[in-house]
Image (cartoon, rainbow, N blue to C red; front, side, top):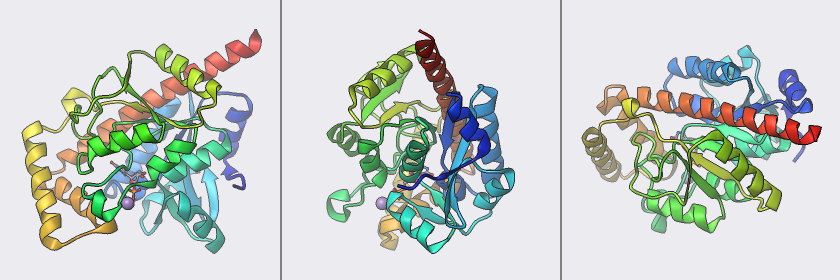
Length: 308
Ligand code: PSU
Ligand code: MN
């Protein structure tokens, strides 16, 4: 992979081994309604800075892979009309000179190419319900298998098949850590019912585990699963009812493939009167804040080891 174009501020921080956090653009361009998406994009960058790290929002603009955006570029990402780019799409978007928003898969790819090891986002893609017939499994999982990046997220949405997603993460050797939790978070809800293989309770433990994983050269990614705060979680009964409605709507309308997720999310937004959007925004901010604290602690550890 040719090196992406790295913003000067990000390049300086990397050269000085300071903390950098990668942020994705698909969650802004396709995961949140406008105009909230732009204010969320700005807030996420501010959240990273407030913790003492440098934000690097990733996107493809005019056929150039960017790691770190100017304010005008961030606005462009949120203005609509961008393609959704998974890792396989990067070459096409670059070769054809178009704009696109990066998913977790392509953000991890470009972050790793730039030398960034920490990424904060909302939720990962995973195994869809009915994947046994549709084969719909997000490339996020395959990329995590081969990209040694730490992803801080709130698990995967309950519109997916969460137990199957957890099985796949195990198959692909992706290390999953529950941050102060024993259960895998289900995005809008703290507890999906699936368990995490490992629990960590503070940043020092995260740093020890991340460094040990990378030193061994396992080569895969790490998921730090951070449940949404209790006061921002969707009410369980509301969640279960809206999910059931959404799933039956998909069935009645015979939707499949890439139509499924937007339709499910749209139903959540309307049927919860925007509460699901507020929940989404709360959890992504918390994940990005945690990612920044981890990145700062990892950088401090690197610098301490270098001094010895
Ligand atoms: N899950 C969310 N919000 C999102 C996404 C997933 O709760 O915005 C986005 C992320 O960019 C993720 C992508 O990487 O969707 C997965 O898409 P697919 O299933 O098409 O691989
Ligand atoms: Mn898919």
